[in-house]
Image 1: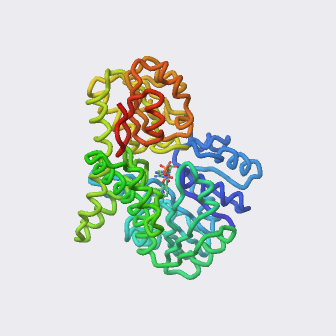
Image 2: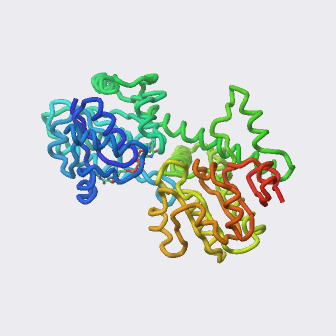
Image 3: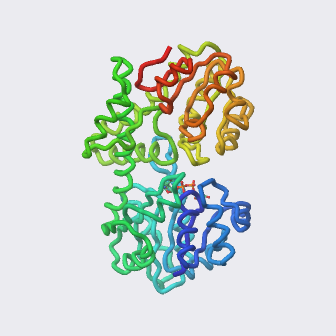
Length: 432
Ligand SMILES: NC(=O)c1ccc[n+]([C@@H]2O[C@H](COP(=O)([O-])OP(=O)(O)OC[C@H]3O[C@@H](n4cnc5c(N)ncnc54)[C@H](O)[C@@H]3O)[C@@H](O)[C@H]2O)c1
């Protein structure tokens, strides 16, 4: 098949490389010449494990092509995927301007007898109908189109693995022909097929992310109870998670969820609910607890840090990605800087992105041990494996005061006691 992917971010480029690797001809459309030139040379721009190698392989075999011009890709492709960003507006509603902008461009350049336009971007209910209206109004008369919602479920950091091993492939469309073509394209992949209408497909994605965010907020809520009562959050959540109806996954107390999906998708569902006149207090609580989780660690640092020199480990919103969108690290750094803390931070790949926000306000260093030199306290924000395996005796020797605020519960309190640290974690007894 010949297909087009509009957008080359975490979703677009991963999807493009995987489908190219299956033997399809894949066009990728961007809107910045400079980025398209980098992609043509094999630079994926974003970091995703294994992506650079897969991109280089498919460039070599001439299956993947990058352009800013819609003409050839739209005229050749049986399926065109929209994977552009849908960031939150100030009120939390999803900003769909990029989705509609590219829909206009696609419409004008359609030439095939029949083309499927499929939105992979996460969009509120009714958006695909609006895309359809644009396409029907602006396409040439002699071509047919059908829209399909194909929400994406990959996780940053394991994007290639998730795309190659999906739990489910959701296709929402009113067109049997479109569903057939999309099923053919996804043929090499396992995973349950869910064929449904447009609105259900759109809502499935928001439901998934909101439930995952709810599990994280629930774990944080319970950790607040534990901190007030002396109970141990990890033991409580382990025991609860052994119940297979609940499960332990995504119930990790800490500094809250971040990233480009959960915060914006919970906010967008909240807004959709309000617009529809639905009581969304439940979703509001999920958001509020997430804010409280970030405030919680800042309060502990302000109260218990023996000095103002802070080492900060982990800047990306989760391990194995360079993505810092809505990362708790940003909120924590902003607050600490405002309160005159001096920060030396380390992250193995997200430092450059953080530098763009904070410039010289914080010092970024090349390894975790450099960060802790002479520090009054260490704050752990992202649970990279590198930190789990750190030489803690070396850390202790380098620090001015052996104090750790662990926002991800990556160490065992008993071990920290043995090593002689003051150890503040989340929902567990403090080691003094
Ligand atoms: N990142 C994830 O883990 C993930 C997972 C599932 C779904 N999603 C959803 O997929 C969508 C894309 O997410 P992402 O993380 O890949 O975003 P991203 O920011 O990494 O990439 C967005 C891409 O869209 C391009 N773009 C933006 N405006 C454009 C325009 N007007 N014309 C052409 N290209 C334009 C950007 O250049 C970029 O390549 C979002 O709706 C997101 O919610 C993301």
